[in-house]
Amino acid sequence: MNQKIAQHKHCRSCGKAFVGEGRYCSENCERGSESALKGKKRQLLILYVVSVIILIGALLLSVL
Image (tube, rainbow, N blue to C red; front, side, top):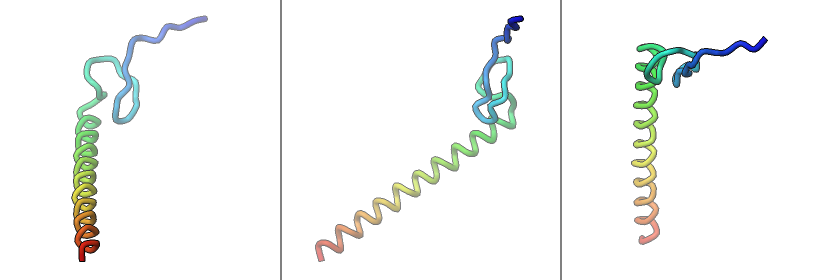
């Protein structure tokens, strides 16, 4: 009793299986994923800026 499963993809956002083109099952998943990605990029940029500020502060304190 082997049943074949139709060719499908899994949504990158919610993981739901779907048949079709693209990486997401719906526009809502695509928008949600894009906004989450923007938030992660912003968080990473803030981390880099804070790290550079701390490094400069440490260098200035070591010179004094």
